[in-house]
Image (cartoon, rainbow, N blue to C red):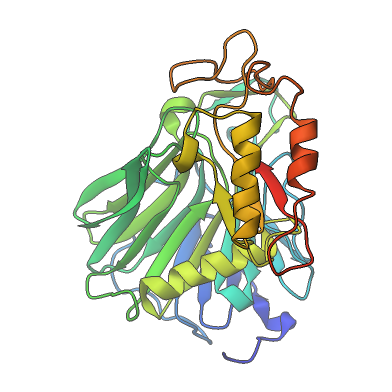
Length: 386
């Protein structure tokens, strides 16, 4: 792996030109002096020095709202995202640039927060909209991230599926117009994973360039890839506009979930490994995030819904004798007034079934966790399905 870029070079600001630099990535944009708009320059492999002007005509694509530059702030580390799950890190891990925009006509302020995790070639962005006016406004569309890519031929990759058959990869050509997917169910759902990638059509699992976009959010979302009339490709992901009509009173702020964007020069595998490493080390806060997983046995395939105190203990005994370290009791253990005896019954009261577990769960759990794992000095651990 390449040397870690000096912290001072993770974010470079020269006038109104901004660069976020990782091991193998550069994310560059500037402020258009004549309009105050943000203009994308580069998101891809590492570059340094000035970027030549694009000889192609300026492409006036949609941006959701007029972007008007006001100022910027560079922050060591990464600020907390109020009320939302978010990546985290100390100043040795991450640096943050906040670009402050203001539209004097609508009195709307927008803060675009870009954090760079150099070790993972990851850019994290979120948007905060503040109403500085005197009347209530309504936010009808808000993307966590919108990125312009070169005028080239790309494939779009998503993860579709359904219950018990999640995350089937779907790869299709990016054609002129808008193509995308999302969820309007109020949660991300099995149907579409809140993730989208674009890659060159020759990119494989191990070779070629790929860009991945992963919002840290499980609500309704929309992912769109648009190839404009002049060939530029724009990727955006964030709130689903069909599920968004957010009233914002004077002085109030709406903050979008953050989106993690990674660049890989080592194919789709490099992209996914960067995301996995970042999330294990800088999103998951559980003490078990990096622990080795214990060998476990789950009761489901053995008993399905037909469980009770006796057969659970007997199964746990057999598990411990085989060297299993964790025994998990699956569905069917709960339901008082409406026992959970099938997929069509009793979901959600979480009271131990008094017929199946007349003494409750505490004595069973105590007996199971007193069992010794074969050839080890440790006791069997207990898990439960909810």
